[in-house]
Image (cartoon, one colour):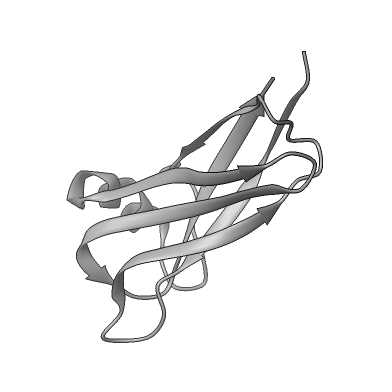
Length: 97
């Protein structure tokens, strides 16, 4: 069984921000049958947002998902929020065949 992991950063831009953003993740190990899971970690922070904001945002309506997968190339990750967010948020991903 092949497995992998990594991080992806979602950039919601400057004010007034947006509700949806996506990021292309390059990971050549991903196969046609790979299951990709994204999740938020409360301990992650970025230049724009601290640990507390990362811990609270899933409760405030931030969801992440893999919306496209290309074998041997990677996938597209999407972040959606009920709020108009600004700045960057980090998510982690794992995949397995």
